[in-house]
Image 1 (cartoon, one colour):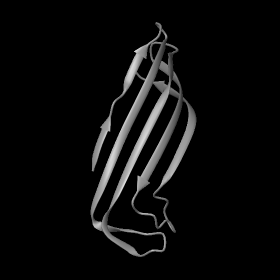
Image 2 (image 1 turned 180 degrees about the horizontal axis):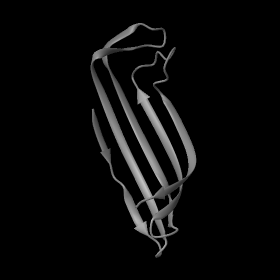
Image 3 (image 1 turned 60 degrees about the vertical axis):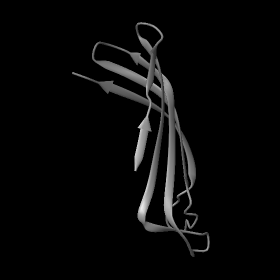
Length: 103
């Protein structure tokens, strides 16, 4: 497995930051064979690649708290197309609001 994450934060003002975080993960399985849609084996090892992207704003509400507003998108692709039990190929996205408290 190999991963890379490149977080970037830009200060917009004293209280606001903009953040942008792309990340990628690759998994190469040594003992798991990939399957076709019908369940037959491909004869090659399974490979799964996942990419994530988060963007948003962070507001420093006090010296110890931050509020984050963000959007994230995630995509996973694999040579495993037999998805009867677990989805291996998908795209997901979500919005969020978070509160961070540090003491």
